[in-house]
Length: 74
Ligand SMILES: [Zn+2]
Image (cartoon, rainbow, N blue to C red):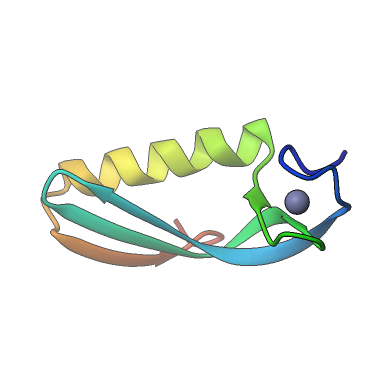
């Protein structure tokens, strides 16, 4: 798999994901992701992006305005 933007190499690395939706700000730490060695663009597998969406959605519904969670613990 290569970078969508520059075709550079992607390496597996844990990164922090941030979402800012309505009044709710969420940080998910240690997300398994693919990072481009050339431009630094971060990509997620379908499985991970689906899981992130799920985490963000459930935290927003829990009425917390700011949430910081660990991907593996969420
Ligand atoms: Zn790139």
